[in-house]
Image 1 (cartoon, rainbow, N blue to C red):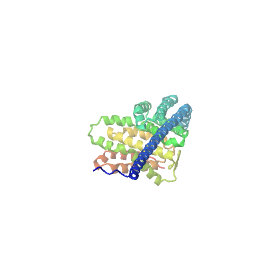
Image 2: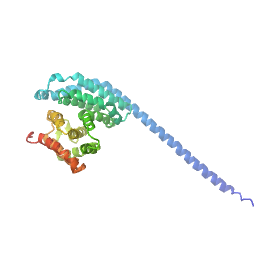
Image 3: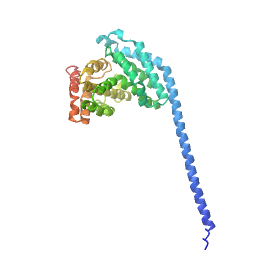
Image 4: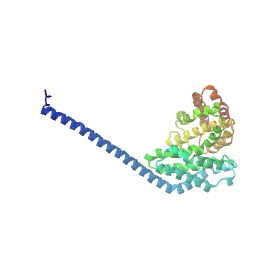
Length: 330
């Protein structure tokens, strides 16, 4: 027998359903294409915005460099005399030129949407050379260089639209990390260690936790000193918090260097003189520094076993003694 033919109404319903399914699929595909185009347009739009901002900031680099040096000199002129730093070592034109060149590279990377970690690989060696150049004859010179970069960065961010400051700040943080902190020295000290050396294992464990530890400590210090105001502003001001986190990260890197080199010279010759020169001028009380050191020991010991933590103990003790109330009464 021949199969019964479907009724015209049923066939029409099936055709309509198939047509509707196809129409929905086509509409979804069309909307997906629109969304993809929106994403591309947004990316292109942001790239164009970043390029325009970078162009504007590059045009202002010369003037911001000059203003930054004027502020640095005002801040540290008396300290140069107090610390008996040889004025012939300080070449403002060379320092401003180096800062100008580094910020040009960072702004180009930002304009081209190069990822900040990629920027780090591009300028780490150059910043290490700049740091070495200025600290070779007198480690205290890093204070003048770091403040030149600090003020330049602040001025450039002030000229940046608020919506872009956070992103551009990520590029500038790459500069801060390699300029303020002895990272190249830490790398070199690590390279001298056996891969399985326990000191190296301890430091390696802490490296990815550095920013988290710093943020915890800054939050705790803010809790303890809610109304404290430094030269740059209140502790809860965003730019002060960023600088504070950077300082705590710097203390950590100096501790890593001491552990890896198995001596305290990095703290004695660089970190301590830098703090003595800058912190009083920036209205940072020594009690805050002592809080930082205490909390740093607490945070690091929480993340290491007792044997690993023991490698850091001599250097905590040294820091505590150097910045004690007997040395620096408030």
